[in-house]
Length: 295
Image (cartoon, rainbow, N blue to C red; front, side, top):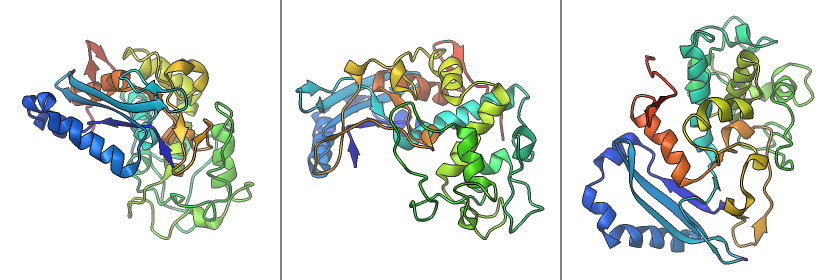
């Protein structure tokens, strides 16, 4: 499946290593266009960030092929798992305020305990979830966790608390023992969309705000990102890139149970503010969202 693709050079080390002359070179345009052709990507919006500034942007192809709408730096794309960096930011904000201890049992902050039944005495901590070492499954397929990746109409995913109880609590509607792997918490790294969603639910429980609202109020709007959101309703529909299925036509926008880990919508222009804050000790344009004082 292809969303029209936003490529952000997000890694601080990579961005700072880019030579200033690169932004003047047609080689960069050519490399992106070749990749688009090889992978049949409808559109790309890209940027290079150096220090706290965007020093180069490029937009290619059509964000809406049916209507001939070209991509631009303001085109709003689904960011997929880049969304997990937003979850981590929200969790660390709460930790910096002293509301979450990332090395304590996550059950201290939830209305239920979270335990791998194979290791009932081993707590699952926020740090383990942040580092994908809690022991929770990915899951990779719906066969592993039934209905986990079902599609829902935009902005209509089931509440995170309900999803967590259905999948994590024995007796829950979708609970299967395979939700937990055979390694004790903290012993094995395993990328987990379910674990990321559990962190988002932690944010809801501690902050008292639903996760989408928390991120908009405490991350996106302070960073000057009004057209960035988990919710379609918050966005300008004319800026939203059409989603495409490989070798097929457009597909509707949708959400999923694990929306916190994959459903942020943003543009190169706005998401560069978030990346610049992470590259500059939590500050963008004199606005601090994090102290980044964790070890």
